[in-house]
Length: 178
Image 1: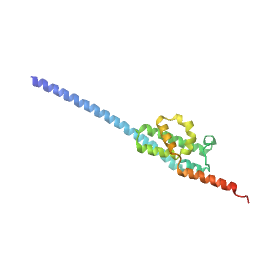
Image 2 (image 1 turned 135 degrees about the horizontal axis):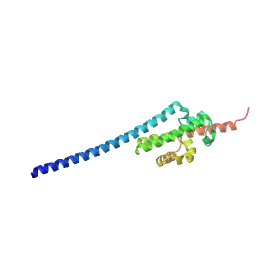
Image 3 (image 1 turned 30 degrees about the vertical axis):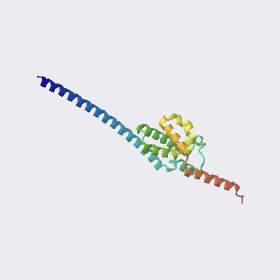
Image 4 (image 1 turned 180 degrees about the horizontal axis):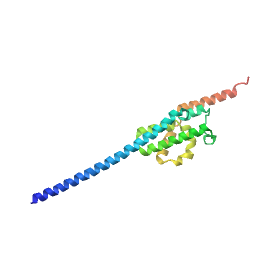
């Protein structure tokens, strides 16, 4: 009789252990599914941003926008109010929202951080002007990433473009009128 009682208790214990394992497994599966869904959303958001860049390459970087619109400074970008400047500002806004979504969706993934850092860097000349106005609307993760980007400075292509335009303006100003 004692053996039957013992076997019944042992069976109950095993059932409880297996039920606990099943609950833990279900929780892990749910968490993994949520993580995968967040990563899929981040990837989709980034694809949409890249698609916009392909559709409008003249807006895809500060350099291309500047060359297309013959500017060397973004100091007045907020006040310019042309169709082109508005389109550019909206694309930069989409980039920032994309960056925020990715940063919130993907846990400190170094590969994603590198991609986002480079995307922000190609817009650094304009973001340098816009960030004091727009930065407060974004979370801590994006603000930290922006600080990293700002520390790296603008791309060499941008620096060369601004320098070559400064040289061209100086040469034109010094050249004698014919």
